[in-house]
Image 1 (cartoon, rainbow over the protein chains, first blue to last red):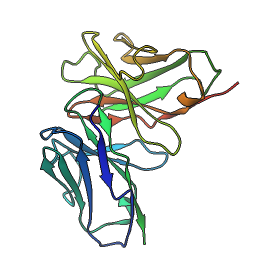
Image 2 (cartoon, each protein chain N blue to C red; image 1 turned 180 degrees about the horizontal axis):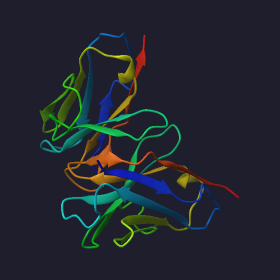
Image 3 (cartoon, each protein chain N blue to C red; image 1 turned 30 degrees about the vertical axis):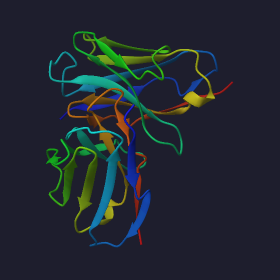
Image 4 (spheres, chains in turn orange, yellow; image 1 turned 45 degrees about the vertical axis):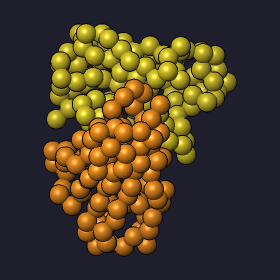
Length: 107
Length: 117
């Protein structure tokens, strides 16, 4: 299985901040990477696919980059609704696997 | 806009079979574009991909669960289902159904299944 390692596991930030989350794959996955936002009691939401493509309806303050084994998710101008847990997911090979998650909390 | 909704018992006894159904609206599971799958998350732990089914009926399962998992589709009801046999407390988790296209692009809200006597 491909192991996905996210860092940091949690971070505290203020409204208006820019935050960056990193995801590393144990082997190359080209750009077959998605970023998913999870909030308690709500359906998880896919934000980005193919490492850098925004899902329909996702605001442009979310951006993704990377290829191969290292990827980043950047959130510009953090707003209250952005405080959530973010996961990366590789879909290069089966089984699909996820990073351990990054919890973004209010400072 | 596609919507997915999980349903099924919230409590299952050890050694019995966990059965969940995902009802899809706003899209057809007969579509050749997507796969339809299941993912779970034990409390306080990470996400685990369980498996998926395609319109042809072909399936892919996580090797860690393959011996216990079956995913089936009912096109007439636009539903797909998960069966997990011989459950233990380790199978207690929130179970999500999801559409797969470039990863899991649409998810249900999830349903908590507790394995306990």
